[in-house]
Image 1 (tube, rainbow, N blue to C red):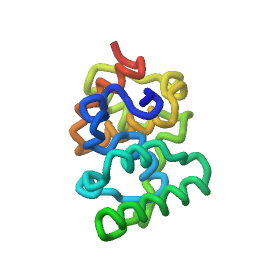
Image 2: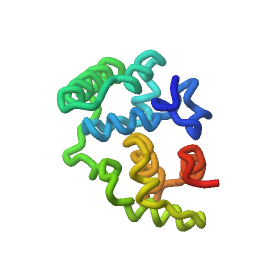
Image 3: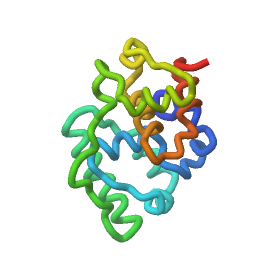
Length: 153
């Protein structure tokens, strides 16, 4: 398992994949699949790893991911997962503007995030920061992620 697939701040659950890692969350958001933790927990380890590693770059790959993920969940859980009516706004895709929610979360920690630093991150890293900075979210991994990405001391 490489850093490009799983992050260090996920290390407490990556070996077992008991929680849904960012690599899967990104694929789910792109494909519009709403996967619940109880559905995820019914999957075996090889299926979880497959969902984390499947390609997702093109529209065809996203469609295939949606179909394969839905079929796998239906087989394992007895019902297909819900599909999102509206896909989340892909704030992580725009490297030309740091989302305000990330700047606000960074400020609560006494940090700043420059546009240059934001633009230098991979889409998966930007996605992780978006997810970890959501309002109402625990945000406990935001600082470890910032450190891991070289954005905080």
